Length: 112
Length: 112
Image 1 (cartoon, rainbow over the protein chains, first blue to last red):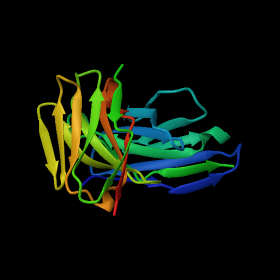
Image 2 (image 1 turned 135 degrees about the horizontal axis):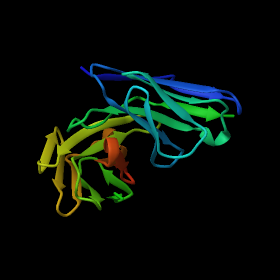
Image 3 (image 1 turned 90 degrees about the horizontal axis):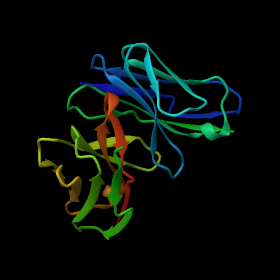
Image 4 (image 1 turned 180 degrees about the vertical axis):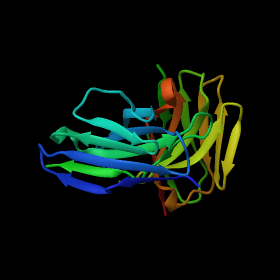
């Protein structure tokens, strides 16, 4: 069966520090991978998506970057965090066709 | 550009009531429509996935319908329980890499 792992679950980081959030998928090959962010009391915003290894598309200009070093691994990074980077980050996967989306459990990031 | 709207934004009902959540979308060229549940501070749990060729999907006390031509979907919850309290989101994949467009959400509270 397919599963998605996302860690850490919570993170408190000082302004200006680096960030690395990791997401891995099991039980499927060549998935589409996505990073979403949900600010407090707000809706879900698509940050990045990837249709293959090394292929990253950015939806909004921001202080973050993403990488896909392996087929089922998706990493969200920042060199220097800003207060505005605080939020709930969700990783998700889908495959071409009609399988729908599966989301990870999320990482709550607080930048202080 | 796909726009997804959910009505009502918030709903409070006593336990045992049947209820309907509404979702409307502007572009009817969709592959499927997915309903999610989000508990406070948690990730998204997929409830039902309706393919574009289907009219309904059922899972336990949940029934989702889809009318592509009119750009509408409904989520019917029978015999509501306090444990159903959560935010319900509908979403449709559109464009490149089937990026999900989320509705605005309905916050449901089921009271004892």
